[in-house]
Length: 212
Image 1 (cartoon, rainbow, N blue to C red):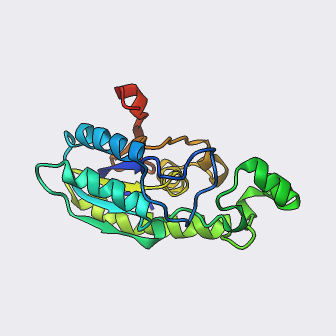
Image 2: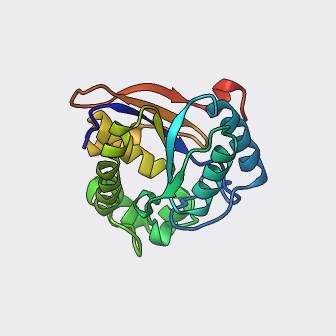
Image 3: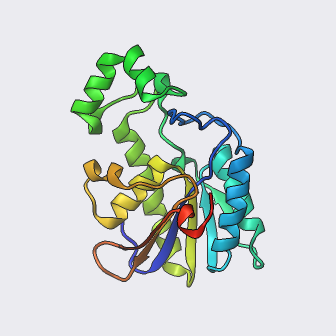
């Protein structure tokens, strides 16, 4: 599922309104908070210097609102479209909880998750394997689009879905996907030059550019 040419920028949405405390946030659909909107505007001005030929985003509100801010900052409008497969994983009963809270309410499930993460199913939610499969399917569908455009394709989504895309395109094993860290408003740039895997040419934090 690796494109043979082209470039992608994988951008994590900025901080949503309810993100305090490192809580699991999957299919819940809060808007961006004030701080998140300010950060998005700053990142948008920075990334507006990089030409893109299209923007693909998750349909969840925090990704859509980040995408709208990215698109509005561009002198030359880039078409934006949504892909349902790029949604974050459905955390089910863990949704809105911290790890400590989930450990207290579902200790057996937490133990199973630590022992066999690739086959874990969140109670009342989604299997990690099914989540990874749908995101990889989205990545495969995007390959021709990435190859045929002269400039980059910008993908705005979530920590989980972007880790799966990046991991698949960089040739990592599923167990290695979660080592890729993208903070809110962080981005990764991957370049494809005809090899078996893409090349990670940038892994950026907004703080590096003085954006908080």
